Length: 412
Image (cartoon, rainbow, N blue to C red; front, side, top):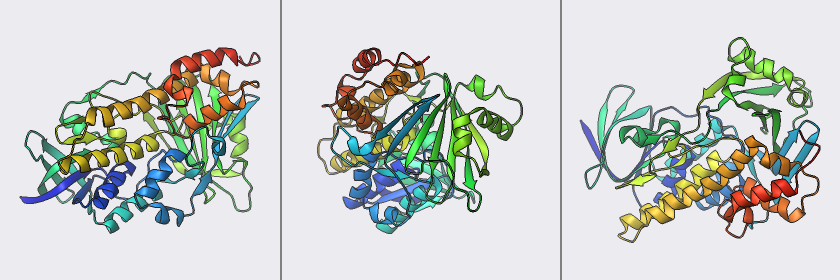
């Protein structure tokens, strides 16, 4: 059996894993990544948030990403019936980046993976983790490739960035049910016919209220394609007859806003569905390991926060790994777990408020002050750790109060 030693082994080559790898390499550590799939590969989570941009720049990814000419995203547009509200990231309450990108994730993730390999982190694609001995001072991870070759990798530290694969969470029995209600998503992509001008607003993500507990995303890309997904109550998303494609087109025909924005476009990807996407976790770290990105906890895609939390967790974990391996104090409980759970809790408040109507009442109010809108915009841009923002440091209380004060009486 082949054996290898590295400073840090990373499981998964998505944004969390590549962010961690880039920062560890900058610190002079040896890094290896194992990835079960082959890139490029398709995943959802295509609308980024401005909060991530500084991390991408600091990690050395920016030049390669700019060269891909992704669709610039300047804000988020929300619609319900005849109500509409646009949140412009340039009017953030929090100092920071005021724009980001909308990206085909197969391309985006592949660019990050190619860049970290250039930096010096080899990636073994088509390689799965089959066992982990985490009781040793330097854990040993057993992996197998598609040819059946088994290898042991000994590392001073292990990072699980495996996303929905949740490799260490499964091996170490760290999973627990999510506190979020069970929801599902049904999604596809469209492309325009030659010479057709689409109704999609390219420089923003659009979120449409479809039913009381079902919404639609529309995410345009720079090549003309649009990602479209229905999210919400699984009973509704299974109520139409037929396979995923038939049901998707049935729901699309029911939504006049989405249909208008996609007029003249045709499906270019068969609709897919994911059920029960929310995941919970007992702990985010342990002796010589950490869980990052969706391998830790995922709530809901409504505010496009998945990649933001993945990148934040990857960057945060890298800093603490460097400190620990350099013999310095690394407070994983306070500086990683508490930090990540705090941001997740803020976002959870607004996700719950979106589904129960409190946030939508506030969004579509016509009398909310500009300062309040600016503070909401900062949360939507991913700045969920800005303690000067009352929508962060008193999220539940602030949302409850303002959703009543600025309720739109015309909304059902």
